[in-house]
Image (cartoon, rainbow, N blue to C red):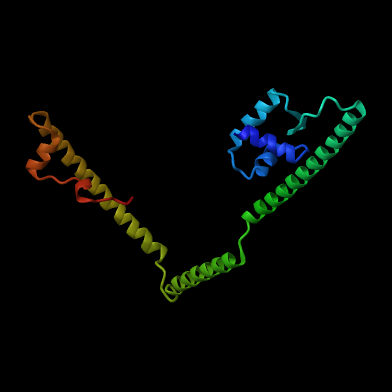
Length: 205
C-alpha cells in the first residue's frame, strides 16, 4: 500500500525528493519505516533511482529509456539543478538551526531580568540578617586572653581526670569479664552501666 502511494506521489511530482520530503508529501499517512521499505522496493524494481549528495540521499522516478541521449542529458542537468537547490535549502536550514542552538546555549548561563531581581532580593535579605546578627554583639565585652587560658587549663585538667577514671572503670570491667560467663552487654545491663553512646554523651575536644 505504501509502495503504490510512493509511486503515485512521483507520478504527480516528477522531481527528486528526500525520504523526509516523500513522507511529508504523503501527509504522514505511513510511518517513516514503511516509506523507507517502499522506496527500497521501488529501487530494487528500478522504478525509481537514487542519488547521493554528501549525507543527503534523494530519489526520483526512473526515466523512459526511449528518450534521446540529449533529452536524458537535459533531464539529468535539470535534476542536478533541483538537487543542488534542495541541498542549498538544507544547508541554510542547518545553519539557522546551529545559530539558534548557539544562542540558546549562550542564554542558558544567563539570568533573566526576573531571576536577577529575585536573586538580588535574596542577597539583600541575607545581608540584613548578617548585619542584625553583628549588631547584637555591639557593646559586648570580649573575654580577655588570660581568662580564656585559665578556662582552657581547667578544662584540660578535668578532661584528664575524666579519661583516667574511665580507663580505670573499663579495666575493672575487663577483669570481671574474664570470668563472666555471658557477653559484655549482659554484664553492663546487670550492673546498670551506661556507656557514653547510650547516654548520648559527646565529648567535644
